[in-house]
Length: 59
Image: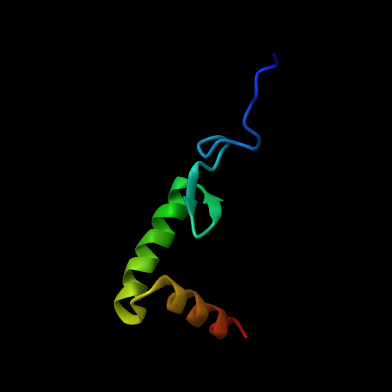
């Protein structure tokens, strides 16, 4: 029988191995996003509210 292989890329493959907010990012980007979320989490309490506030400010 043929061997079955998993489809898609493994999580650690490629140049951007870190995964945050549904995106693959580099180590520097990951650290920046993580620090920013920690600062904003004190004000908004949840990631949902943080993202909604950020998108409201883009308009």
